[in-house]
Length: 282
Ligand code: ATR
Image (cartoon, rainbow, N blue to C red; front, side):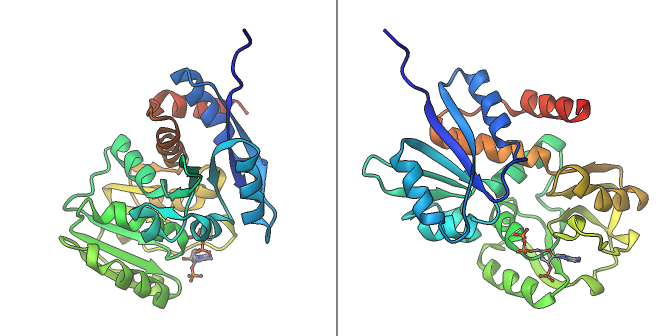
């Protein structure tokens, strides 16, 4: 008897060619013995909904969604998890037995899991997030559920940060949640400083004061690879000894999606080691 066909999964984005997700999910499948394929799918702006339905109709069991389609995936999903609703964006789609489309957002929990790996404590600590776009919105619920003492959202456009602080005020039960512009940052150091701006991707630096960190702070850039260098170099120059780019978060958010689809949570540590190794060798 021939072997059953593998279940199909994929990630939709534009551009998508350089996505690490197919590699990550292939390593998860190998590790857990799951019979599946995972493809990079180029989405067409303006045709996201039609393409998603076509992919599911042709047999896909689940899709990850990345830039620039996460908000469209949010609008498309009929059933949303609480954290996806809060994030206003969806990165993981699947259908139930009645073919209803479900959407979740695993970015924030992926970020928190990576903090756990790094020993970056949040409860009772002072946290600064730079940026107030979609990336920041995705982090706020999981972070606030860990009850930092203080959480400051700082953004070039202060009003956007203020809007986010208002939207999440009800979750700030044990946290002093506030917002400000990047030009009026508090002078005292933070235990965790997260760069969630797109500044590292352009030539523009953030021009941050060294007083934002102390030697034991953790500086974390949500981007991985060269895009994170500028912020992490700043942090090291400011005396911060622990820095991390977003590769760990990428692996952790993928593991959460894999667990939703397959009911089994892969061990992320060997996969992250393997990716770093492949990256260094490239
Ligand atoms: P994402 O979904 O990645 O968060 P976004 O919603 O476009 O993308 O948000 C980009 C974030 O990076 C915003 O916080 C933006 O600041 P503004 O709200 O003031 O636009 C921030 N950003 C982008 N380029 C920046 C730069 N050169 N300096 C500082 N902040 C920058």
